[in-house]
Length: 156
Length: 231
Image 1 (cartoon, chains in turn cyan, blue):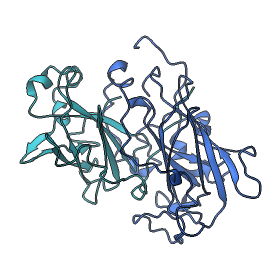
Image 2: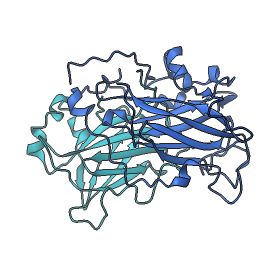
Image 3: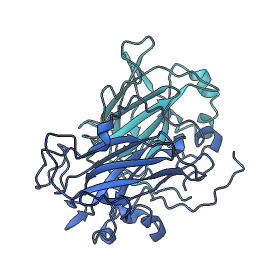
Image 4: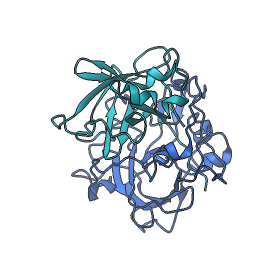
């Protein structure tokens, strides 16, 4: 059977897809809860204000619409790694994206495990840092650049 | 799993499709990195159970005190995977403009009236046969600023999860016979006429409710665990 083709999420999903506590895969008060903050940027470095991101791994799922600054945030627990570095699947939707994009978020305090990660090792070493969040005070920073300089690595 | 080859053709749109101008600064320049099937495509899909689904979410005509204006429709179909199996108990989310072509979204500035009795968002879970069913009103066409005198054909947005990570699908469903279909760059980003037909529903007398609502059927195929990644 031929898969139904993808179409863009469009700009007008903000009244429909968000749900209560959608960005919180775990409550912010949960033990080990980590806040992730990032910005979705286009090929001109401009914020994408009509994007939607989802993160998932194991029993965790969260969804966040970008704001006018292209900013998104999540609250997650670090997943348990099966092999290599622990990571979250990240799915990116937006106006202008006829198909969604898949990427991964790895954790900066896992450099040994990340070095041994079979997926990271498939990626050009120069582009690998786009997949690893940065520690910024109390939060992890993870920007997604759709195009151009510092373009995030996407997977299929 | 990696020895299994898909038997179907693929009609996915490209990331860059200049007729749809918003793709120009948002399409990645690099090719996606291909992962082995069993690392990614057969990985379990997201646990979407935190997304609330109430019984009334499947009837978009009964979410307010009064009834929405417009042509009442029953929109139903089956969700199957590309291996032909029913996708049971998966979440289907829809959203759409009202009958006048206006979304209840602060970003929508089209000068058409809002309908106080219509939100335009629905959710349901598929049953044991993979079937879904919504009652709603037919959305109106609306203008957009992609090019001079650009109008989107009437459409309903769909979001589905399915069994695997690779099954995730966000798409749009169109209505048969819409004269705007051949003019729409978003629909026509699908590279083949056979692919474009896959996103157009069929009028269906069988599911039409006499003296109440017109029936439209649309079956959806999500990528199964054996399907190869999209090209």
